[in-house]
Image (tube, rainbow, N blue to C red; front, top):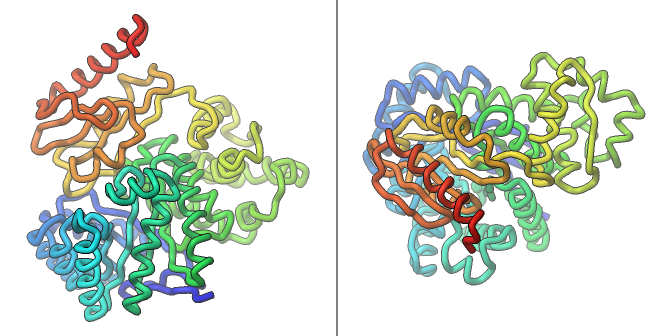
Length: 448
């Protein structure tokens, strides 16, 4: 078995390298000052790597200036260019960034052309020592893969394997792969299937873990802890990102709790994969003691999600009890965790991206207002997405969607179809609620 270790600007990824934490700027990449400041703030908080949206040549040039600015300030963490669709932009970004995140299947509709573009990118990455992350997201699979395998975890894994095989053929091993989904079961299943595929072919590339569009607050943290924790508990994963619709620095604090849970020798997570049931923890007196050791509500919340969430997701338990300084919140905690584990839906399910340089409205403010005004809608899935680039695809599981279309304009979706376009931002939440209410009334009167 060949175990690959990738490298981005001296940061080792995979094999026996430490688990790395990353985040992504939500600033406009062309705003050099704000982007550089956010990178340095994230680095100070403990980020090992930071990604920036790089959708065009202008953003590539801005990234070069940002990189020079942070290097001159004494920060040497790897910077990752996030590129969608354009192989030429990816090639130019590879000359500047330490790592490029792409989905090669988006480079061209025709698979042969996509392979040719990916080969050209690999050549440039070899020349400049640039790493590649092959990022496959649920809901964003190409038509060819969907026709072959469906929009499924298996389709995600097999799509990734096609590009990894090409890396091997081109003798390029400075690559990492991710299979993200907002649905924790889909996400975990996809990674496990990919690991099986890689083992069958005798080569293990590093894996970057994340639950995409996890949202914010308690639910976003628990959803991320469940998905990432289910894989780390089985020793799967080399880098992680907690995607929150909040200040990116907040992602670092949550990610550090997750990392430490699985790396500290006195933490239950250090030996979680050896424990058969939660009863083993309780019989050893670990849970009450462990709860008292938490330094904050967030740490308590995340650690218990890491303890029970993977067991719920894998259906090894159906219920649990918590003890400790925040046990009065057990009912609320339990409902959120059961939903994050896809076991029981008692509340609305929210899908929201963290935002990036492509987002042209106050995503966090809008998302919080949508949550406030829809909190009564049990079981309804609502997406709030920053832009049209990957919003419609990655909110594939949503019943309704609010998607930024450009400056002060929003598209409202029902399922995968836009029902309103170019809605003024100040009216968009009302229009979204009108459609949800109208559908609800229609359902009550017999709409099929």
